[in-house]
Amino acid sequence: MATRGNIGYMDYDGNVKYIYNHFDSYIDGLGRELIENYNSELKALRLIHDGDCRFPGEPFIESGDAWEDVCPQYANEPNDIRHHEYTYIWHDGEWWVVPGKMSTQWIPVKDAIKRGDV
Image 1 (cartoon, rainbow, N blue to C red):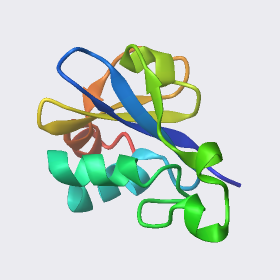
Image 2: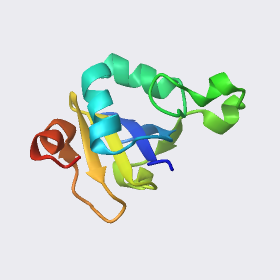
Image 3: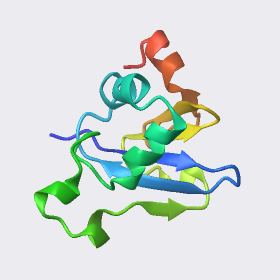
């Protein structure tokens, strides 16, 4: 069973470019992966540029999916992309997460890991 999520980048105008992540989107999975391996603006943008993925580094496009089906999408604000169990946003130099569809509180991923919200 998949723990689905979205990964996005918020620009300075509040617009969001985002992709879908299929597996292990919980904080101790995807959250930790983002902190450890996609911890700069350039790395975050490259990840999102590759389109929807099974997990970072495993884009769907490599399995033959059409680019139109897996390309990054756009939203007017971060709360517009909260369709799955976890949503991550790169903003102001760090990763943020809102865990769960019912939550409205964005917290830094590093703080969620420290608190044990895994």
